[in-house]
Length: 99
Image (cartoon, rainbow, N blue to C red; front, side, top):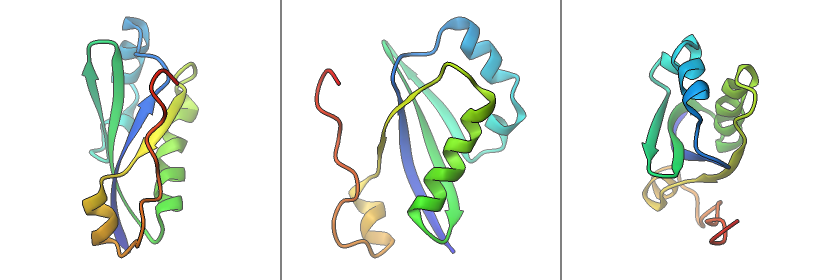
């Protein structure tokens, strides 16, 4: 098993109502996924232990099944984590500005 650290970027920042809903969902409070807020932006730092990066991302996206209205814009992975998991080239390219 490998540990995968990545960031999920939301399409739009959470509304106050969505943030309240999220705070009440147990699956977002188990330590594998953490909300990070900044002005005009919401992202989630993720740490999942699975065999593959694809499995880790799929598991993280499953968290959002119970959270309608939150759309993932992109997945970002740090180049250090790519190297640590023996991935030769970056698997994810940042979304274009304004996308």
